[in-house]
Image (tube, rainbow, N blue to C red; front, side, top):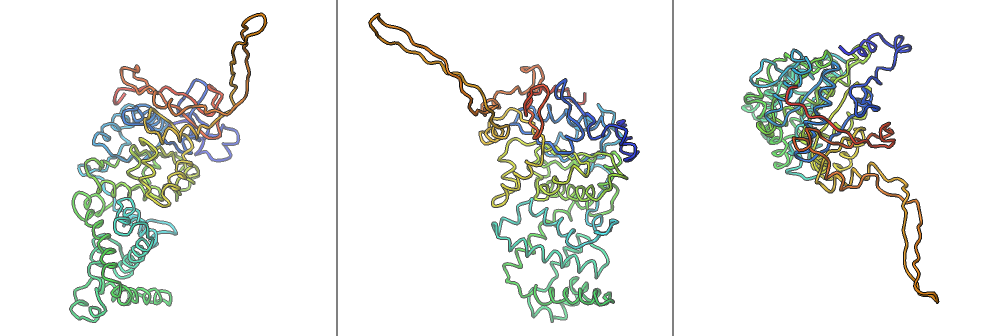
Length: 491
């Protein structure tokens, strides 16, 4: 266990005489420059083209630093070999026993709906929080945009229906399960005439929940909530335009269907054997549902777990649970949501060390979509204070990186020369002039020639590290050229 973790646990009185644990070094970027816990808690973005060495270079360096320091964490996966890679990391750092793999061939389960509905705390079971889980999954899957473009009407309508589904289940059944939410929406009345049909009333779970909710409503507030619920399901919903109602129902049913089939049903809709809070005790949870194998389903499942994890970590009291935790996502563009922007603004106070790796800046823009997406991506990037920039052939990314590092006043010497013909013949005239002018510290072209590792580079990956508000000791500037060693897998 890292000695600075004991300083956290001893509390503030001990911290008065001890160094600030946030300044504890995790690894060195140069003999004079440490990457500290404080830096890690302010977030890291690693950018590098395919084959640039970002995963085997800076990504591996940071992963080893977090594991050796005793952090817990959450790892999202895209490639089928990500699991073996992290098993090697944990083995090399003596953390094999802390690695928990969530996969169809493993025993661990996480019922995300029951977790959010029954967790302790003042915000437990709040309808809006549970609805937000589903809306986030729809956002990532792109379903919100397929039918409606950027019109917020569809998102608002989906959220409204989701809220009433959740309230109907909670007040009528006393629980919230995905299968029952599915049955409530598909059994909801399709027309005002169907509301009065005795056959529909007898067979509909939606109607059964309304009857139970009415019986359970005892206080004036509960009666008022029930009346609002009844007006929606028996009045507003069946009167929706058929196309509107169909799109709303289909979007939820399509998502629910993925989780009601194997392997996700067993993993996420049964019991809970592993919860996000396990990372606070030093466990490393790896979601072995790689996108390249599970496609959209793998994205949905990992995003829902990630969101539950983010919410859980934000709720913790770092005085009682001080251990830093990490969130690492290679190919991070697959898992980005609008909530990441908000989460990162307070990640430091939650002792969360976020590391997002991607090939280029346009990946982030595409992940967030059109409209407000670009500003959300820029906001997230702005809140990931450390940027590690590897070899890249993308012009947009290289221009962005060059401008971020910014220009400085640099001296430029100009040499002038010429000849003139006078009475004594031809003479040479030359002179020198010096002037200060603004120029880029790192030109975009320099990012195209950084060493990419492998035998041709002596198994060393080159990166330019930028951190806002910092002057690096080794370079005396706001950026630092760093050589990251590539270790053989598992070493």
